[in-house]
Image (cartoon, rainbow, N blue to C red; front, side, top):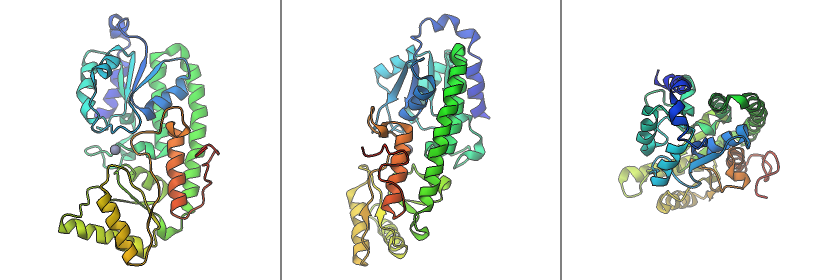
Length: 313
Ligand SMILES: [Zn+2]
């Protein structure tokens, strides 16, 4: 299977890259912030980490600029997500792999059975399931240990401590989501990034992306969604700036006509974390924010400051 080949290949590069290794600056380049954050947790100060795709930027359509390509070329190790998340960067990564440099697609080490959509059309957004992301973190630690073997023991220690925190977060998400009254456990959201969250924490996920009010089919979809929200007394939907106001307004107004108030439950982080240096700018903070925001808006029980009292501070 292709997925395992990537891992195997990256481990095999040790011997043949001696000459090229001196052209690199020893940095670890991560495609997305979520991966960079895990590297920082595990390599804490031992390795320099560079994240390519910044906050608020869509990895699916990200076009690497000249400086991004340079960073990739100089890096000692490149970690990207894979499963076609970084659509437009695929050729840059392939090129690097062909030249025998160290590179690994960290999400592609997971068993197919864990993936939504299977091997042919895998849904890449698996960081929304904390237990799955913890497995990815373990794979990242393996890559880092192969890259800097003298630090392997320290990496393993930090990985274990980090995984304990992730387990606590996972447990929080489970309990908090279950506190939402059962009929209201529906996440209506713009981006298609939340299927793993839905599967892991028992909440039904419905999208409003792509529903246009221009066509008859679009109008029917909106009406169906409105009826669902009204029938199940769902008090909030979650939007992102990419969704047309028109669909969102149509849903809110449609519900209002039936005497049901729907509000906008807040902004969720989908493919990128919050601003660097903030709690939401870490993987744990991002998930804590999403879970806490969803649970509170849908009438469940979760503290406003999240599971470790760090949110919205
Ligand atoms: Zn996405």
